Each structure stands twice: as structure tokens, then as C-alpha cells.
Image (cartoon, rainbow, N blue to C red; front, side, top):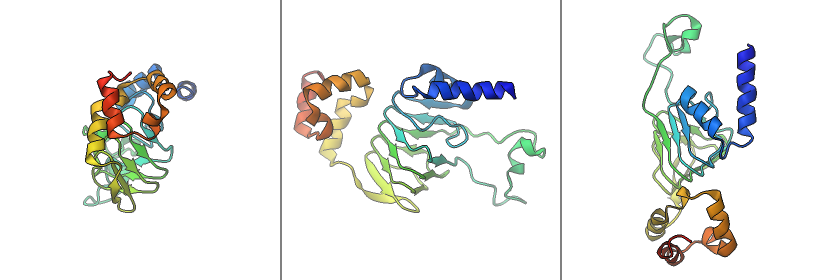
Length: 205
């Protein structure tokens, strides 16, 4: 009981700086198979977002998002978790699965979205609308919403997506983005293909 309380307090303390906290990331990676990139938030919860889970950098995940990596067994005698959770005293061990849910960089998942077992990948730059029930993979730079989630539109046209991908901006630290903000905030707020290409030619400075 004391160990559990200490663990909760430690996680709460680390979560105050979750955007860059290495101890928090190491703890969730080692204990829960949850690997989270820098500046991402909303995914340090092994009950709501169970591992194996890989989250890229700069992801915005609402703290009400849930991932359900497996379904209750509908073909079994009962759908109750007694058949896959040893805490009920029926089975010898918890069910184990190894296929991770992969959420790439710069993904935004809105409040109360649910990621069902058919969703194993959400591509870079995608947006999942609030309350969406996601039953399949989401392509990069796609906006999906609804129940079941369907594509609404692409965030950008192909030329812009190519320019963004070429920039690899998500690999930069917040300090780099701050410097860019001071020099050229429009590149961050209203990017264009031409501006991104110039930035790339200048070495991203």
C-alpha cells in the first residue's frame, strides 16, 4: 500500500514537467511498455492508454482519450474479463499482446476519443476529433471525426505535406522553435511551401 502511494506521488511529481521529464519517460517505458517522445502529453496513464504504446514528439492527447487494444471475448462462454485478467482468480496470467499502438509525431487527439483494437497506427500530423470512435488506422495529415470515425479532409495539400515532411521540424527542441518564432512567426503560424523550402535551404535557421 505504501509502495503504491509512493509510486503515485512520484508519477504526479514527474508529471508536472511531463513535456521533457526523462525519469517519467523511463518509468513508463520500463514498467508499462509506453514510450513517449519529448513534448507529448496526455499519454502517461497505463490504464487509459495501456502499452505497448509508442507516441512521437509534440503530440497533444486529451486526458480523456482512451485506447482499447483488445476486445472482450465475444466467442467465449462469457465476455467478462475473468477470462483474461488473473485478478479474478480464473486464469493463471493476464492476457498479453505485443502489437503496439503507434501514434506518430504532431498528432492531436481530442477529448473523449476512443481508439479501438482496429486502430494500430495514427500517422504524423493527423487530427482525431473529440468523441471520435476510431476503428481503423488514420493516415498522416488526415482529419477524422465521428462514430465510427471517418475522414473529414486532409490538413494540407500534397505539396505542403511534402514540404513539412522535408523540414522534419518535429525533431527540433522547443528552444529551436522559440528562436524561429522570434525571427519568423509566420513560418510557424501560416507556413507556405515556398517559406518552408527557403528555411530548408538555409539549414533550418
